[in-house]
Length: 314
Image (tube, rainbow, N blue to C red; front, side, top):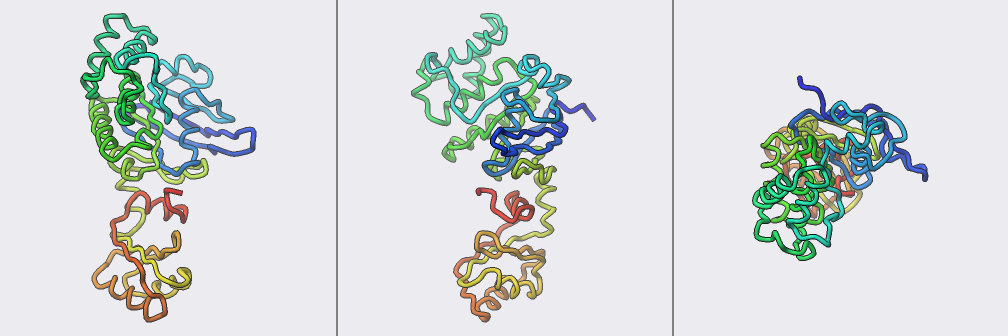
């Protein structure tokens, strides 16, 4: 197995307010994979990226980028990474092309090489027709593509993307996913944070699920979903006490497990033949009129709910 290109051991961050943002995080990211940190706002994802990219000083533990100790040698670490933060950091005094060109110069590229790289990336990121445009005129999706393009001008070993599609419309999100797939196909190692389960499921080789600064689970998306132990997830909303309904549905044949999530009863099952009809009949005959029912395969959000008892979007 190749050596990990990102490694953390007991990485922790406690802020002056006493808030523990990251608590004893152990991670290894392998070369060439898209590694996802999945969790709700406040899970510690952004703080983790901050520590790995030198912007946040850990309280304890260690972090390495390649063979570089991030805390001991932050300048050396910065040369190996590209970063796209949640906020728009484009230089608004420069054109689209100039944002790329000057980034290359900043990292020591020659004028010729920086010009060629800027031209190449504008084509690749579907921005060539906006080369001379003021960055203030770009749509949200275009601006995000430009920030990703800028982050890889100097060919970093690792690309960090912090909530890269947050706030984008569905079309722009899909366009960015396509481009990230192309960048990854070239062998680029990517670590991204997200609270979108579809994004983690579609893009990531492996996913670390975080909540309240702790690592709850880490594996391939398909393997994580298998831990639910069910083929189908039913969610039932009724009038009345959902906790009381649990006692009714748990005795129905085919129900493997049941829990209350956000006022709904979530039921995991491997055998669905006739189960939905039996559930509705049992609920209503026991005084729980059914108002809504959904049927779906397990998702990464199902895994999160199983681990925490709450929905991922909280």
